[in-house]
Length: 248
Image (cartoon, rainbow, N blue to C red; front, side, top):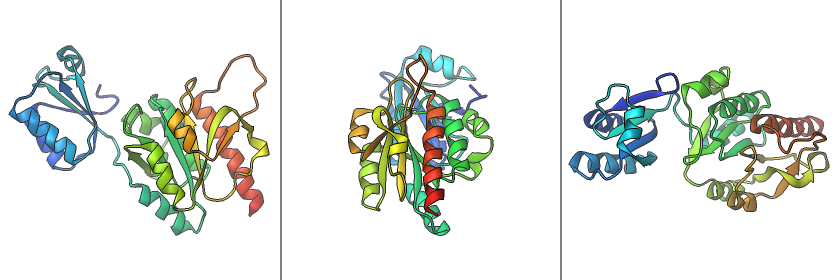
């Protein structure tokens, strides 16, 4: 576990980590525990919107590095998360129309790291990920990003569909990768834009898909059904880059 992210375990240690403001990637609590310290942990986690997952003692034993977890294990993010406003400010500071990546259900840390790397090289101002059903900013993500995490802010939000609605008020519009959509070369992808990428196979979730203005398909001539999520993100991102360059 230590190769992926930092681990804090034990009730007092986790309470102190929460109160100190450490970024909690995921908080694992033993299912059924309801005593005073556990309730304190739940309350502190609620204040900081730290994701909680209830698991069996056997699962906690697997996560534990000491064998003395006392019913709680916290995974600490390798990097701090930004706010969505930080990403919009980065665009304003550069005098550029915002270009954002929004990732729906990307659970593989290597995919996430590769997408963050692509976002940086494509000139995107930041990446937005959901709190649930998504990889977080672990050490593995940092390694795969090849340093891009030092330059590309990543925000984590509770509800991706609601975030899209809020960003539309800021003048952004959204295109998602979807095999049933319009071929990407036929779309106008200029201006303030959010590129929404879903998981390999599953694609973008229905609720998020409904919030998007357009769906872009990558033309494929082979025999298999889909591209790796990070590869699809790169192809779509660079069509956006091409159109932004021609606009300039």
